[in-house]
Length: 608
Image (tube, rainbow, N blue to C red; front, side, top):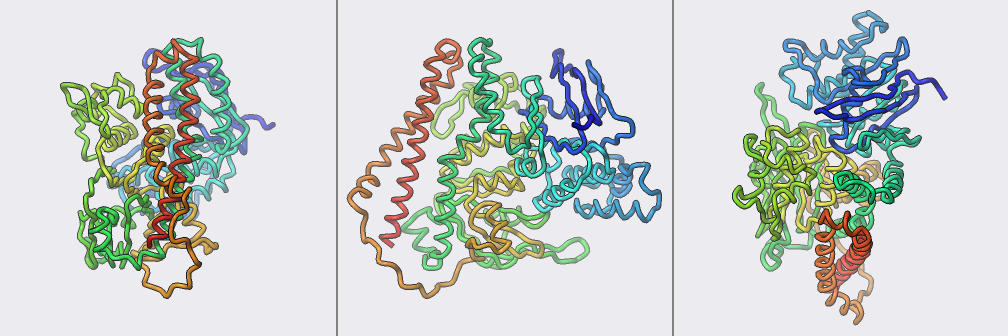
């Protein structure tokens, strides 16, 4: 085992009158590629600052081997007015690199090309996301022995994230990274540091092992849970639910998502035989968005034209889950605005279906009043209640669902962090009745627990979903197809999630959704098919809606019972009994929904 080049011994940081963490010891050795994980507010960023030497410890010691260079990417970059991007990045060059201007200029230009920023721009002209990319370039160009990265993928598009992954795979030093991007962590890390309730746990494998490892630890703690006081019990139970939810959702819900993808792939070959007038008339609401040969070109201040969308056609049906991806500035939001008829196309047309009730998440959070409290943002000020999908909820209980503390209920929106504002906006949107949910970059600034929460909610959403995101795992978990916008306006639609798109793009034998609406083709002679369902299938199709409804009511009742904080502390056996029954009911529901969907598709095929 190599000697650590950087270490903390019995480290303590005090915050707000108490210890954020205490007694933490760790060592970073050459070759370590560490994922630092933990729920929001656990102190990950503070710990990273302490490791970087950016803040002083309140107790304990920090050791740095002589000659070791440390590179540190902060969440919030420093802006020096009047300084160019290139000048800022040059600050990161280490003193022992060659002083030759051409050589250092080449290094700076190379890394700026990777992050996609013009070196001649002034720092004060950059957006928040662009300034973050400059800080990333400054950290990378320093060629440190230890590189510490705090949320490096925030506000980066997928192309830049992939570039960063390749850069870091070739990085020779030790790496420690905080990120909500699971795929990024899986691809890069070989160690785990888990900061949980003030303790640091370590594991000799990378992030891919986190779910199984953490769940094993928390299962062991359940025995001790009964001995803890109510507050600690609630915190530990919350943490356990946040982690096990990831594994639970990967059963029935992911199977259902694969069925949706298969159905969409099949429909892309049949859609040319359908008539829009019939679908939006006799089958009201089945077609959500019809786009035909749409294009959009913008003219900049110098009179140069830039085509962002070129001759694209698509039909989005009820229940589809469509992801939109592309580089920053490629035209993703433009396409979304044309889909929603907020922006007129230069050519072609967009037609919205009937009976649409929209809920839109804007990445600028313009629908939030910074002076208004969380309570007033969500609920009637007098009663403190709101209607959530037909059910009356108290605002504090609903805020807890979105990981807010009850003490925050009366705080103004402006006091929240970026991630918390995103959570509040999602809470506001998801409380509304809607059948079309439009999300523009919903995952920015969200931690993993909030991403889990969002994925679970969206996985059970029964309407149509349009989402722009650079989070590959998020897309893989949720969408039935992706629309990919390339520079110059070329646009293609692929069945499946992000990983499916990558496989199809590299010409593996996976069917690709055709661009636009397919033309009618001469069909091959079909196999002889049954003209109607068998007696057993028809019986199942008739009875399953009632079975599903009963299971949903049963699950809702059990979830309500488990939501009572007194149940766990006063009747732990009853709590465990209901928890086990809930898992069984959820599995039955997933299987019943799967069988019903299979029969619905089969009957539709038989009736033409």
